[in-house]
Length: 445
Ligand SMILES: NC(=O)c1ccc[n+]([C@@H]2O[C@H](COP(=O)([O-])OP(=O)(O)OC[C@H]3O[C@@H](n4cnc5c(N)ncnc54)[C@H](O)[C@@H]3O)[C@@H](O)[C@H]2O)c1
Image (cartoon, rainbow, N blue to C red; front, side, top):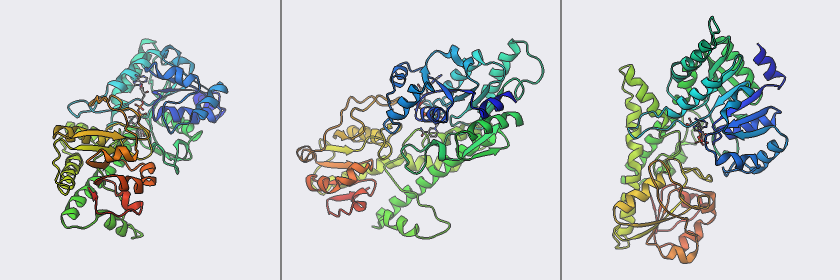
């Protein structure tokens, strides 16, 4: 197969559609192994930033981008008519939920349509976006087959004229132990040739590829991974609420249970689910399962518990304020941490945003601090015009309560200082205990 020869001798051009948290590091990985990479994105603000060797994502260094741009191995464009220049197209566009909590397939559909307009013989297309089983074959395949029909090619098309595969993304932003290239990658092809081509592609940049029998199996693998996390997090969140009533510290119990060398994997409670994956992906399966008359009860239950967590934090905040004879109404609250996960600047589905909403609804005046998020960006649901308040002793003293929502290392380092200058603290991450700070004014939530 010509595509495999081109991949193996590194003459294959690689196109990445969607230069976000997933697409950008993947594109750089290929560029750093000597492939010529063209990045496509509809967001025209990102194109000049990337082409001038700068970054817009904190944990992806400008140096990496600069080097690849300088070596003429990476360039970004919003001109999709350049798609035929590349041999392999990897689609990494968002898959959010719509306002009815159902899959929003518009990004995949739109990028599919644009690929279909430009697809040429011999190209490999791989979808990486997390999605329900069946997406690749039910949405993308018919679009591409149609394009080839228009060009009057006859005979079976996929696996011969073009190749189509699904390979789920497993990025864990800012994880120092794993990066794009060192996380094994599951790959499923529409036909055996499609699988061969996709495996050859990822073998160039990924430590290990794991072929599976179909695109559906690959799509389902990603959902299993995220559902597993969502359900286990819901379990510890529920146990946190039970243990709290019993005056047992859930983090102490989890740490103790983690000493069991087999059969236990620790998950940690928090103020609610965040990020673009765990709160969202499970519902892609729920939606698809309805077509098969199956109800995904575990997923729904986990969603219910995880969605309740910000309310639990609000209850704990009220209790903590009570100890100071303060009501939540009119109290001033400083939330520490805006991003959904420690040490990153990603705000998607962050529980801090929900906490701000719930606290404000109850009459509190809320500010936030986050060393990585200077201004709260507009999200699909929230549009707060808020800027990070600096973490000084004077500022801390202005607030009736400090609520720790994200366990940035920065807060760990400042735990003593924060405790010293705050009136009362609610800690949703067990950060102060981990930092070795004990004080009666710290309430765990
Ligand atoms: N971020 C992660 O850590 C992670 C991990 C696992 C899986 N995923 C999955 O990977 C997919 C992409 O996620 P992400 O975090 O990179 O999203 P992102 O929002 O960071 O990036 C997506 C990019 O796609 C662009 N885009 C949207 N529509 C486009 C189109 N039609 N053509 C070209 N570009 C388009 C956007 O402008 C944006 O730059 C999602 O399905 C997500 O669930 C993400």
